Amino acid sequence: MGLSTHVLDTMHGTPAAGMSVALWATDGPQARCIKAFVLNQDGRNPDGLLLDAASLKKGTYKLVFEVAAYFKARGVALPEPNFLDRVSLDFGVAQPEQHYHVPLLVSPWSYSTYRGS
Image (cartoon, rainbow, N blue to C red; front, side):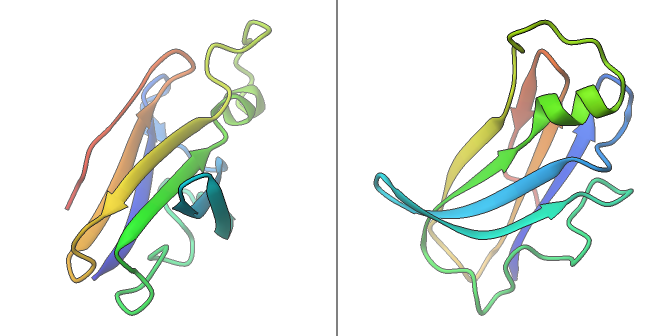
């Protein structure tokens, strides 16, 4: 089924269009960037799935969201240093035949995530 993400800007009540995101495959301290992209108007990867069913493997991954840069680009005055600069979500895929959706709800001061469907 694959891997997807979706980001909602809870400060403005909108999808986080324009936020930069990177997907990494991790193996202990080593990491390999699989893809970097900018979220579309829906707050999603413009190419659809981050990894399709054939590419999603059992293992550990990391999504890195450029939160401070996104809010600065939206004109939000942030303190220096920023409370949140990047949000890094480390997660595991135990059953790659299932769909893994990793949404992020974010403001300049907080975030939450969960395994979606």
